Image (cartoon, rainbow, N blue to C red; front, side, top):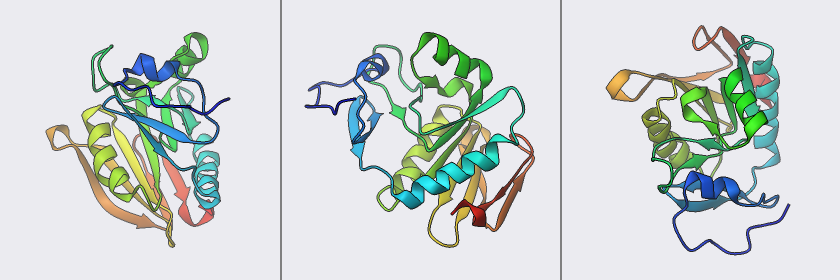
Length: 192
């Protein structure tokens, strides 16, 4: 794995982004064709993400798959046009979509994504709460969870509400329980 030695000097499509070599030092996303780099997450952030994955994985129905820290084609632009690819902390996709990427490559797609989870970092608060919230809603992803890692750990569960974008019931601490998109119970205090 090598780091990107220089920016490509042009707006990138999803195919261009997918063709870039992997970078084990930086975390890249594609925003309207522009490469955006953020520092690697903190150890606390990574532990929260890992613990969430462990709690969530055993509660998923057989037709769904949880995937941590993976590129997601938000599908907001036609093929060949400057695209947007995000790298959520965790996604839940249909098993068929996971299998498609395993067999043929490419990025997971928003159209087959049930849930996206972002863990707020000090430098991502506005991006996670506003920018990505809007992008994921525009992409039609039915559920978006925003986890704030500051003590006490909290979760805002957003769901699509038609043309209104995402609606939420406010921040939850302690234990989060829901019946949609699948029955789930997350012990937020046990995430770190």
